[in-house]
Amino acid sequence: MAKPLFDNMKNGYNRYQVDDYLNEMESQTAMLHRKVEMYRQRSEEVEKQLNVIKQKYQFVVDGLSAKERAADDMARMAMKEANMIVDTAQHNADVIVKEALMTARSILLDIAKLGSEASELKGNMYEQLQELSRALDEFEVPPIPDMDLLNKNREE
Image (cartoon, rainbow, N blue to C red):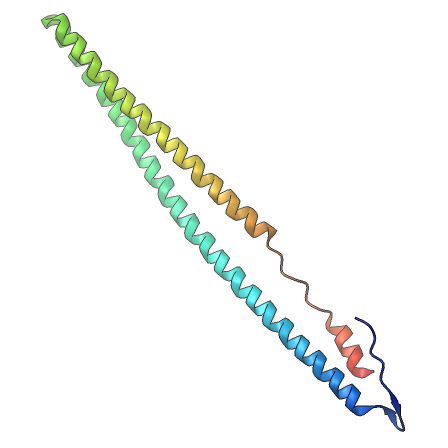
């Protein structure tokens, strides 16, 4: 900002020019303080949103873990059931064997599909969390003016 020039008067500078300049500087300082406060509030809102998203992400991850455990249990149970069906089918007939194998395959496909969907959901949530983290990292608060500079201008 250019150094202000005031008209010289009998006992110093033109008082009205100096008063006008000081009033202008006070209004600019007040405006800058309002902007800083607005940016601080906006930053707090973004942090709150990030915390909410983190909680949702954790909820999804926990749910995903439970679903993966359930899928593992289902897979083990399906394998046991398939083996029992195969043993029984070997004793009874080739038709029963074919039905049991088709049922087991269908169950395994469903389990594989569930695992695939769970992995995809986890990847999507991780990408969204990284995008939000990048947005927070890129958020810049404007620099606060040097208070010494303002004090020097008042003394002059």
